[in-house]
Image 1 (cartoon, rainbow, N blue to C red):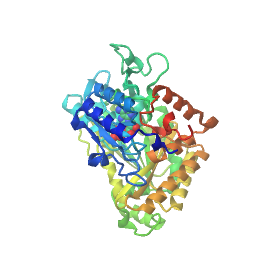
Image 2: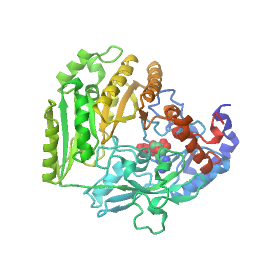
Image 3: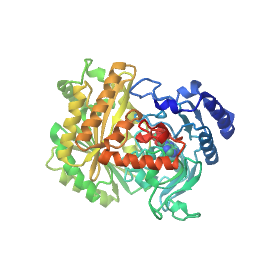
Image 4: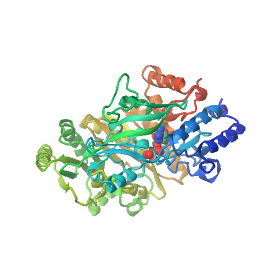
Length: 520
Ligand code: ADP
């Protein structure tokens, strides 16, 4: 039996939408029609309406979210929360399963608290990185720097729950997010960690509170709708020094990874250090057509031409140093010492309080959101991408295996290898940009097959993905296969007990409630 066969009848949807209209106001509940179509994913590597929702509701308060959840339970209607709904490359605003109603939280959009001394803020789901930046600037909190992701239009909560990463001392955003308020799948309101105590003074300060920690249950999950979140902010130091280093030998990335890791581990470099290959550098501000009009990946001789004419390098390493003048000077000396035997050119750019930051990458390291990364899309006509995002150990030998594997598969399928390796203290975030023309059905088909092959090939080598598009959630969850997928079975057990009607985000991260489980 297909999953959709277990959805309620059309009559139930009509009744539910009548009730949703009462829950949130008739202007804020819409079934089908033009508005619903705007909640499809423009980056889907498949048919445009593959993940289309059944309708959209827009609650304006926590109480309205609770009412919507109760209505969904009453009529057994699946719902899918989005905060900004900009989760492009991972599914955008779309739900995993047809027949699901999107609950768009952007009307719940207050910055509730900012504390300069303890350096944190508390926000609601509709607060984007742009909103928070503007709020901090206008309200005298210029010295607090939030970690920001690639595009600034996403929300603090949505991006955080997806475990988005930024290039900032608190780049692992979920690891600086504490004290959640959550509407549970039965409509009840709960707070996590220290925030579970009424009047807690440390609601967003201490990571755990008492007993088993449940924050993590709500990230990349379908166990609750997060309506408030605390997020730590970094207090602006005397100097933020943004650094680019350029390396001209293709094989140098192996040595670079081994040089960066100890600097990350000892705390000289506090941010993820991004290592970008030549094609990625070029794709940010030129189009593929400028260089090459043939099929298949851009050939090596053309890559070399791009490198010379654009003044690029085989690998660009980017990171930032934070601290007092003396600390940054000492850390920069230490970095140079580590890299003295790897030929490179370096471009350090120090910023002090009050300096205007124009460079888009440097803006990120200074906590300023922007949309510069969208330059990538111009590489191909009508270009969109699905990001293949596995985690591997941060060693040169692992980097070699990763690079050779990804390049081999990309070239075999006729795609360019557009690659970023984010070196952290022990692991590396790889992002391989699977860039395709959204109107080219054959290219989309290939992109999808290639993606599936990569998931399997990487799993064989012991590398798991840490975030993926809706289309690949089941495959990625299956790849975490120890003891007959004991982890997934555990997650589904929790899901079934919290959400017996299976209404909240069925299929998110491969977690299906019993009602929609194909093997049930
Ligand atoms: P962004 O803020 O980056 O645009 P989205 O709002 O699209 O991100 O959210 C990304 C995903 O995170 C959603 O598809 C959903 O699965 C989950 N999500 C977003 N907001 C919430 C929330 N408030 N509570 C629970 N899950 C959420």
